[in-house]
Image (cartoon, rainbow, N blue to C red):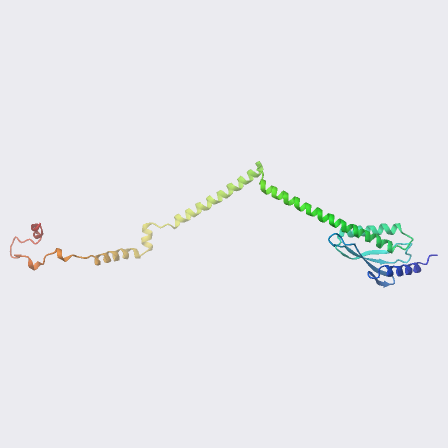
Length: 240
């Protein structure tokens, strides 16, 4: 009869000596512990890391232990799913034997593969971005290819814009016509116009200069006011 407890205790002692810095006991009943697995460093020193939680069942190793990803770092969800699938596969292949070391070793190798894949993904992303940039520059250089469809669409938009401009201009002209006043309206609305004209005439009259030398002194004239034929208006004409 298999002593499951003894086999489990012996494995735990071995695991603690193999992974002294990454092994942590969570509980003793049921036995539950974590092991942190880190990949080797990649070309740019990038790493991925996963912390696996294992829990013994009563009949382990004849029955597989329970496992889950307790924590992860730099690991995509899709890669995490692959890790869980790998654990399932390895557990089925090693059923009846203590398997924690085997499971952890398989995960370690998988993480190393993922680091290599990260490099490939980064290279693919770089090439894709370069391709997109090249296509964008090519499109900008060539411009938009004119087709019947996009020309008709542009023409409809252009005609609509022009119609709105004409409508706006007509409205402005009509409004300007309404606001324009006739001469009569200007006169009626500006009461200063009538007085300003009068004031202008007064100012002009006050500013006229008279040359008095052009006129003779009336005392120097020999006038016979008793003469019945005396005509003051005829004096100027006689002199001429």
